[in-house]
Length: 158
Image (cartoon, rainbow, N blue to C red; front, side, top):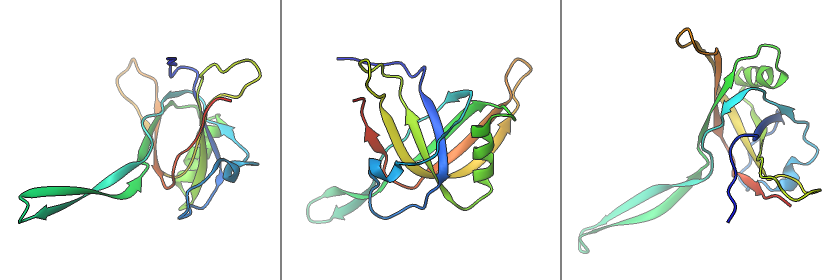
C-alpha cells in the first residue's frame, strides 16, 4: 500500500466548457489550455454522491432506500490572495460569467521516472470568489466556490 501527501498537488483552470448530460472522458479535456492557480491552501472534497430516495412500505414496516441523481459536489477552494496571479484572476473572471469551466487537479503521487502524475478533470461553475480578511496575523485569502457540473474523470499515474 502506498499513500501520498496532499502537499505538492496543483489546481488548474481551463477555458469555458459546457456541461453535458453524458459523462466526460479524458479525451474531452485534450488540447485544453491550462492555467495554474497559485498559492492554493485547500482544495477540499469532490466526487460523486448519489441522492437518497426513500420509500416507506407500510406493509413491510421498513424504509427502502434507492439511489437518485449523482452530484459531484461543491469544491471550496482557499488560496492566499495574489492579484497578479493569472489563475486566480481567471477564477475571478469566471465567477462573473454564467459559464462552466474546465478544471484539472494534479496529484503529487511520485510516479516512476518518465510517468505522469495522477489527474482529475471536471467541469464547474465558479459560484463565488470572495476575499477573506481574518485577524491581524493571517494572510488575505481568496475563497472560491466551484459548483461541479460533471462527473470527475480519474486518470491515475501511468
